[in-house]
Image (tube, rainbow, N blue to C red; front, side, top):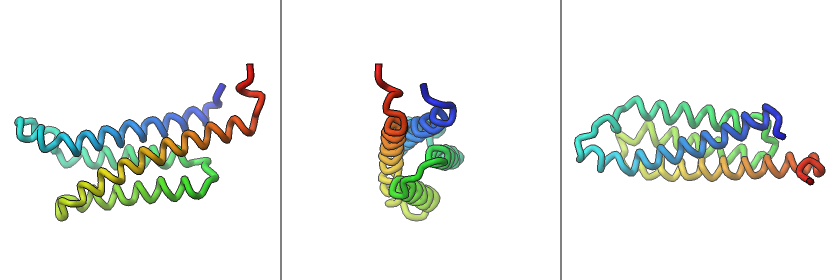
Length: 130
């Protein structure tokens, strides 16, 4: 019995978790796929897709978030991801920073999702009783 706004926020968290997971898999598997001749996975436009999805998922999942610690954690993780993804060609070691930032984004979305569910339940304690 979630409202439409709660559903959009929860969807943004799920999209953020899935896209960050795909990003990690992409980063880890790209060298293997390149040696197999699958160069499609190394296209430069893919990083823009990951950045845009991360931006919108963080923005929409935090739209009504009142907990500053969750907000700061997710936005800091996104900025670290952004920094790493756009500078990794000049500094290849930043690929590991990007993977770490993706893990942080996943963690932040899970944390946000749990906090929002707890907040919704505590605002209406009779809502989930049967």
